[in-house]
Image 1 (cartoon, helix red, strand yellow):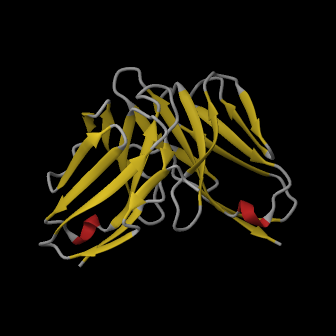
Image 2: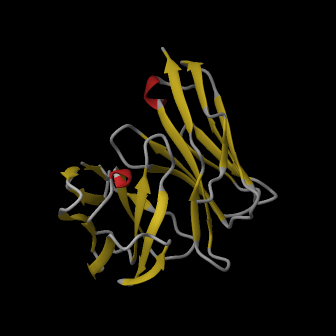
Length: 112
Length: 113
């Protein structure tokens, strides 16, 4: 099925560093979402974005809905060991056919 | 703790067995979903239920049969599965089928022998 392109695919960072990842699509979405998935668990919703250009924060996490509606960005500031996991973006559209499509994922590993 | 509860957490079954996966939510959500997730891949949508009626079937083989007995429960009946069906099966719910984010359970890890 369709997937959104997420980059980077994986990254190692030092504790305390800031992290940036992005998600791009060839299609427009009405809503962008960011999830984190830990091993053995389901994805947990971090941030939901509903308007082009919107910038939303959740603690150390900040996400933006791209102006073109075809991309989104997630930043994590001052990373800590528990930030380890896989981060997925998801695009949602209800125009025409309902689509809730996940990105390919960014695997984050934090070095203490 | 997730507010979407899935049972069992793990399931091993043979290709001729019949089993069911169960999902429950008490958030008053009226939309529920089944996803399949292979290792190191993103979740892929299988079925969407809205107000207890099946609204989307993403061309899923008939050996997977969803059922929504009421607004809080969602089942996935399994029969004559293939080894390639081994995966993590995730259930999710949302307030409705609109611009509303989905909330996921922790999944059932299914292994087909």
